[in-house]
Length: 198
Image (cartoon, rainbow, N blue to C red; front, side):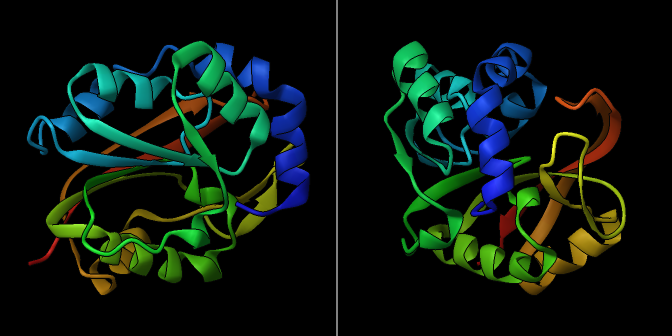
C-alpha cells in the first residue's frame, strides 16, 4: 500500500482502528489459518496493522515476521503488542520459499487491481512448497475511495479464485460475510485459504 491519501487516513485514525479491530487476533479466521501450519512454522503477517494478529500467532508458538506501510499502526504494534514491524510497502517482498504461511488480511485491497497479479506472484515465491495463504478482500466491482478517502479495490469471488489459480495456488476453503468498517458502512467480504501448489 503506497497510496498517500489512504496512509494519511490510517495516520490520523490509527488509534480508532486499533480499538475497533484489535480484538480479532484470535478469531476463527486466524484459527483456521494456523490449523494448516505446523506449530513453530514461520509466518509473514502482510499488512499487520496494529499487530494484534501477529501477537496472537506468536503466542500460539509460531515465528512471525510483520510488515505494514503505516508507521503509526506499526508503532501501536510495537508499543502495545511487542511486535517488531518492518515499515515498508508490499512490493518489497523478495524472500524465496521462506514462509510456511502468509496472512494478508484486508491489506492488499488498498492497492490497484492491476498490482494484484504481481503481489500474488511475490507471495507465491516467498512461500515454501505447499505453503498457506490467507487472503481477505472486500467483495464488489471496480475501484473507488470510501467515505474516509481510503482507496479500495473490490473483487468478485470467482475473479479472486482465478487470480490465485494463475499465481499457482489452489483454494482449500472460503468464507464470506459482511462487517461495518471504519467508515461506518457495511461491506461484504471474502476470505480464502489457499495452498501453493507443489
